[in-house]
Image (cartoon, rainbow, N blue to C red; front, side, top):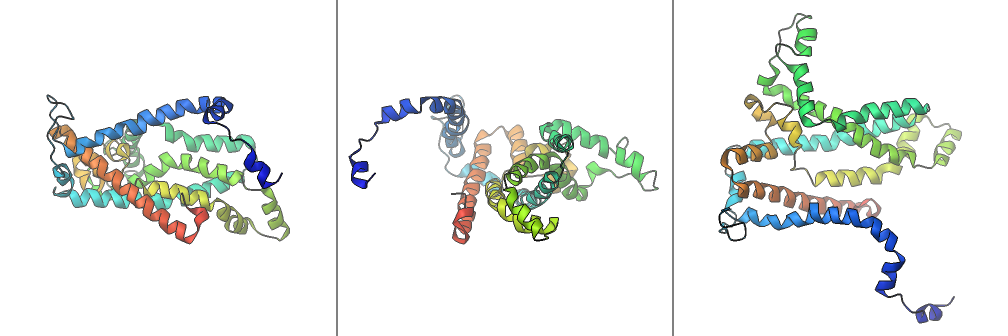
Length: 315
């Protein structure tokens, strides 16, 4: 078929294309509606960030205050603490999650017994479905000063003094990452495991013929093959670097005031301020600020990745 014949062929109208793909479009409809209602319609609420909301007048008739609501985050005495905690914790999570998840994915891929592999995946994935409230009380059963397992069954029998975990903020930069890994690593592992399983076995067969060890296969075949997935997930995580896991930082420390120096993040601070002041404008400004910074970071990091290797960029 030459080019002239192809050009003379009449183009399908929009209506015909819709009718041809009607079943695919129908399957896509529920997800599209959910996306519009859950992700796009709430964007109209961003005007709250620039208003002093008076519910008697309604949102759109409330007076404009410009950027006054944003001063709430930057002029408070805790601004440095909550920003530092949010950035450092999320930077740590973004760094260690791929390392541990990829390691577990490679190990699970080496388990040949199907029943055992499914059991390990289920055990790792189970904590992801637990609510933050349940995780908080599980942590309390371990860390309670009087009845906690660590104090009553580990430290005291060994001759050490019981530790008041909920009064000592210095321990929580270690406790919170451990809880985060335990709860979320199963979800990340399943994603990376799906990518590892999708690698063609011929690569590994050729490596075995060359005498490559499992370590060499992982470093020379597995990691390069799943590198695009790792980069994409990290790019998406960077976009949420100012959005903390509210349940982790509020429920697990049980909102203990003594722990605020190391557990207070932007999300928990805004939540407490909203409960105290009831000012939705300030909380909306905080959410808009987090989203805007995340958007800029994703664009910036993706631009850098794109300059290095276009194939690994998100877009």
